[in-house]
Length: 153
Image (tube, rainbow, N blue to C red; front, top):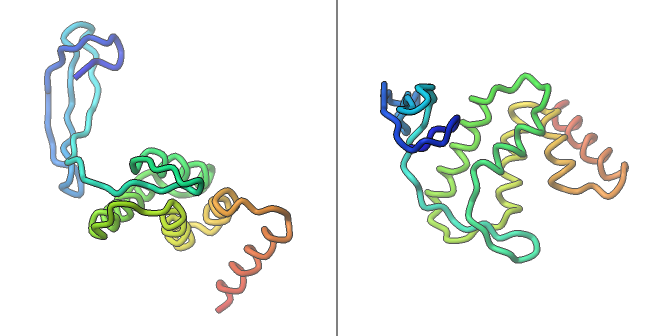
């Protein structure tokens, strides 16, 4: 494993522990050159479907893109990174279990919006505003009205 501080390629494992959910291993490492310590996570690489973008391009599912988008929506909101990671873990599991070779990006966006709606309504509206690309304030207000109407029921 390459040291993130000095780039030296020889490190030693100091400690290994099973992750909270039991699906990854947390390793504490020490660089043999600069002696700095860092943490790595090891998990099984799952086979996920290709994501079909709006313009027809296909690209591999990228967990980090999903997390980054959710983090932007949850900025300055009381949503922990642990909650975000669990949301993405559930999404990945659904994709793996579906057995599909390709999935449209819109389905992923809908799944994220549904989960955010249950976690934090402000983050939901933020994510929806980017994901749905509202063309004007009326579309945005319509979405807010729908959200408020659902909350009253």
